[in-house]
Image (tube, rainbow, N blue to C red; front, side):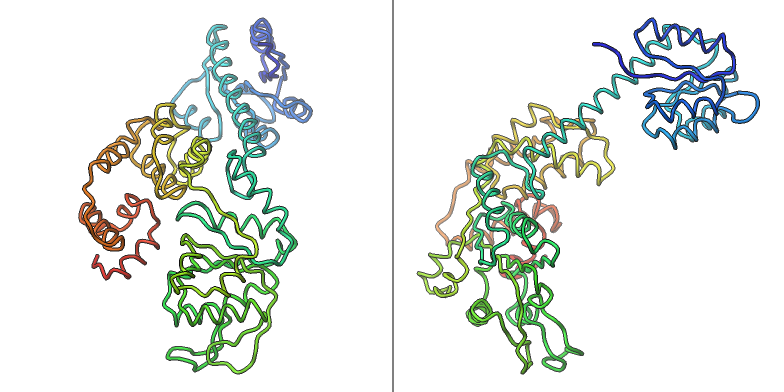
Length: 451
């Protein structure tokens, strides 16, 4: 491969700088020299040097440390190597503290210089390729934080573009953890309302009374603790979008109130007598089968038809396994950075384990599994051993003898068993169940499970 990385040598001793430049030119690099710091900075203004060798002791004006600090301001991506004839712990510490990548001691040896330059440029090449690859992947597979190359998901993303500027109500269906809110945000931020509020409400997280106040606001004195007038989420979303998550869980009374808002775009605050008018686009989401809920009388058919103007069904992760490597790499990079862990990627064997898993908790479960692996890993790459517990859990699930009890009772027993195994740690239990903590807290309350 042709070497095109430019290198700068800064040394007041002409024999030293020209000797080093000659060695590097023999290796095929383009090399410039400067006798002092001022000359080096002038050259750096017009050339983006990959590596700068800077002598620590230079008479008059700027010494090596000052030159390095100014060079880092002009060319922050340049790797600085300090050259010194006075190698002490103090000078090494000072050089490294101020941003030097390496330091070498005079007299310099050609082989040492070649190996050092080769190692630094190899790393720079990998970093450069990594940036290019990530930008390429981002352009190809990422849209408003949705990462996918699955054909069905690509169709959904195309649909979000088509309907983005409409006011029509959208119903997003999909299993828990598939990314329904991300799709809702993609719709909002792709259209004419992008600069207006996007307000999200979890309809399953609150009681009927609290949810009513949360959605529509309340007047002073309307209930105990109502010390003043409070705007609800519909008012806060005026001009923008309100996302009603888990819409299938709202009470019959709130179903009627919501139907009126969809029909008339007006409502009353709790305890209020004045109508409030809003211009809000409604996007609702559910993991329930709403037609079945309508058939069973648990959900109003007129509200269902009002919500279901445009329907989007998000496939579960097990039906788009080609997205698992993309999502896994994305989560590794993001979570490792957030946790301050030096983990660069995930091995092929580890990816095979993830691809083979069925992911009942979908993308949210995958994110939780990656976080757990990063927390417990002691390597620079996630290996198959970091996911051994996942394969053991899969094997254990295959031999489970399912009792003849209602599904809700099965869920209650599963939650109790996992909580006992995790010594009451809700975060760990949620991770094992493949759900987020807020969802688990909702279920604990619903089933009256002490924790």
